[in-house]
Length: 268
Picture 1 (tube, rainbow, N blue to C red):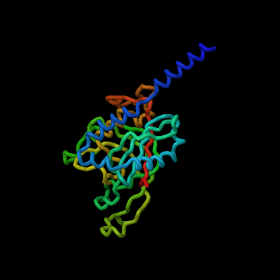
Picture 2: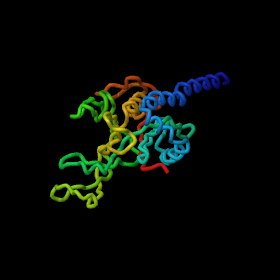
Picture 3: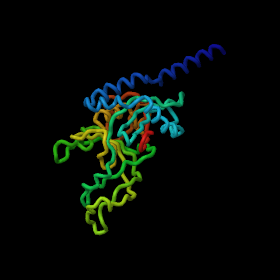
Picture 4: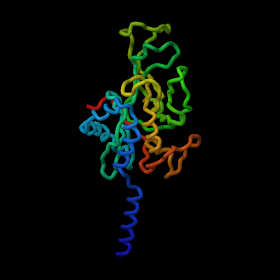
């Protein structure tokens, strides 16, 4: 009986060690791969978000905790500060632990003034808890300016969260003519194919300016990709299941693979 207890204890210990994660190591990796690779101005801004801010942000995640049934990566986006916060939800501790954060760019509905007939509208990035539906890797193509790559470098992953409800301004009259007086615009319901993806060009992250999707740096995209932050649906253990797109270049933390992002208007 005692022998069975010892064997069971050893097996249990081995199992826990096998699926343990090193929080400090992941935080260090994020700092080196994402934070230190930001430009100096952005890097300085990163240290202005206090520990109390993370605690306040965590409260919004805790509201959704029943959705997270195992230890995994969970992301939160604060549209007011234009940041993505990466956390680990620890099922045993029943708590979220921050890994780090990086600046993003979300939908800028005021840019609807630039929209011409037939062009894509500028839609507010939707808020809510979203789980990834599918995704693909960027072809890395430039726009006509030969500077901007709307989906980042070739191979960067586009995380797609499905068609979501949101709002935008209606800047055209019933005849399809542009309404030049912004005071006459109406806020209307709209739908957006909501995705998160890399974006490279002349823009500075940390302010609204996209058509509605969440733009991020190449480095943040690469980190989310390599650490399976949204790839739970594409893994069977450590086996990559995507039928068309290759697995990450430097895969790690398979056991923490997640699928959720919580988007909120503001952390108070």
